[in-house]
Amino acid sequence: MYEGLCAKCFRKRYAVVQPIELLDVARCESCGSHRLRSGWSKVDRELALPQLLREAMAPLAPYERVGFTQVTRDEDANNLALTVKAVGRFQDLAVVQDFHVRVRIKPSLCDSCQKQWGRYYEGILQVRGEDRELTPREMGSVRTFVTARVNRSEGTATFVSRIEEVHGGLDFYVSTNALAKGLARDIAGSFGGTVSASPKLFGQKQGKEVYRVTALVRLAAFQKGDVVRHKGSLAEVTSIRPFIVLRDLVTGERRRFKPKDVRGARRIDAERFEARVQRLESGETVAVHPDSAEERPLRPASKTTTARAVVVWTPEGAYLSALPANASKD
Picture (tube, rainbow, N blue to C red):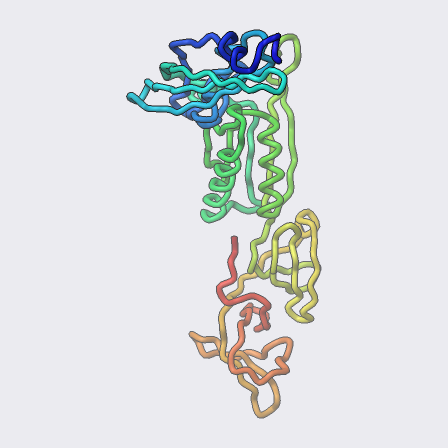
């Protein structure tokens, strides 16, 4: 028994909700988010509608809670016809009430998009190279990386208001200080580099000091495939993230460094290509330049009889490489 009634009579006597005929829904024209009671949300329309229906129709007594499902029919771009099922719960009894609701979509702009259109920003993300300019490939990769990170964010308060190419690098003006610092950490981890942040007093809001943070990422001074001189040794850069790995071209020894620990290294002009290798009658192994046919002793001396090998060709000599001929320098 339910309130002294059988289940059938209880369902007839007690409606689950007082149905509404019309529901106005604010939808952002820019990002597609919907305005809920709790604020703007990027949730899909079909997932937002049950929440909007719950906000518009509270359960009637004696029901303890109510859930909504709907079948949607689009009349035009801004008008929907819903067939709604409201399921009320009382003790162990579920009661279903069917009705129709007309939905009017009200084009609007969410708070974040209004700020974005106004080029609002709180944080600045700067991406630079260590003692060098970013390459066009790096600029494209960093742009794509930041865009993907921001697009995956669930919050509507996350956006990039503008991007500027300056001083051989990139500046991203972003919606929050936390976003600037988070993106800086992600870029440094993915591309190899160091991070620093500097706050600057911007003003006051509700009696509290407001700071704008500039997060600076300096990408490693070298790229994969570069040849450098570090502490007297000639080495090729075999990796730049999460550490810079230098392989000694003479000994083949590999060592890894934090980016700040190789700031004193200097890049050396070098070519990398697949060369013909031959052993002379004297027993010496030489590499032959594919264009000039110049021969140079190959170091370290190859112990194999291979006819071809990838070599690094520098003003100081020819060395066996641990990288492919087309080693990426991204």
